[in-house]
Length: 502
Image (tube, rainbow, N blue to C red; front, side, top):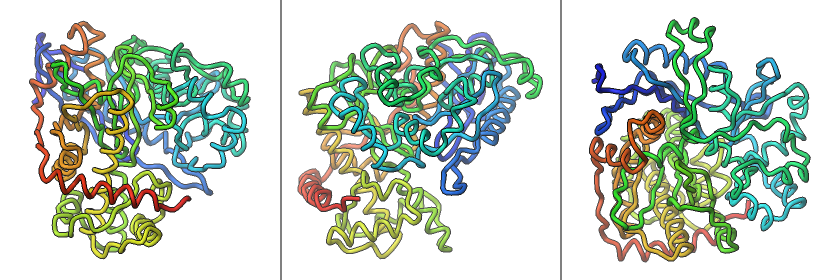
């Protein structure tokens, strides 16, 4: 139920993911929070002549529709802010025209581009600059690839803007690269928190297109009159949240300050497994572990690794539906309980699972290549994926513990994956420590929290997190059957070691 009256502060949180987008209404009275959905829409990249693009005009129209609905439901709004997935960007001319459609990061899944960058800047040197995990989807590789396939897009461009920055620019004219989203590009200096000119020069990348870095919580302006008129709303204030969706989600982790180390899994299309630290970890050990140092709220660093997440199940569901086997997501998860445990494993990091034409065929091929029986039913595919995800999470958590010399007391799972009770329980079993699941809408809540902190409603992030915990109690999963899960983890490691090389 939406609240009204002077005690309640209202914020619109535009939260865009790679598979869906939402416009949420976040309200707080300074001690509790309320969240309501104004609008939700599907999102996906589109294959055009061999390249994956985002349908940006449709995304913009859906965001505008959501803001209109939010205003109808809760008209007394303090500000709005936008977060999206990382790495992807658009180009605009000096007079604001969009240069083509933004390319999807899934268009750049190639070792070839990584090798080209490596030939100019060795991994050790690049990591010492940026502290970012080496992934094919990172902005640095997108830019190098664009020079080869879409160089024409750079010629008329005046600004390169990551997707939330691009939307903010369209709404209010503000030009800036928010710190947390910029940090995912692999082009930001981890120590100076600014673009590294040496990287741009050596790779011959267009530094002049990069916007100045702005911090989460900064003001941006007000919605342009033309945009407000089109939507039929007042000229609302536009704010800068933690624009990388994972940074917003981690801001909303209801972690109590009890002195015990904790980890998080932001569980959605991707699973981001990590912890908060005060300064980037740029050691040789961190490089060899391929962990990433992405920007967080209040100057923190999100030390984490990306694991291919619920995307695997989403694609499995898509393939089954396409074959005439109608199954919704909860039923798919439930089907795993009818399958035998630990019958087979996959490595979620394997490149073949990144954007396969058919997920079931890709799983079959992986099992064949690693000497395992292929699944024979939807439940067996699902169980294989979810058990493998749980073990992949444990591998990352173990890596972080070894790097930092500590042991985690609990794991917080936030985002859509926190609703997957089976995966949460299996993660607790695999980790051997409690899993605290929730809130589901962590990203939108974190978006709103940063706006509220900037407004002075909350004094700081710990105070805001206490309000999250009071408003959205976690479901706690205690570890069970841990000895068996520990034994099976060794088998998972053996399968990973036998995985195909490409």
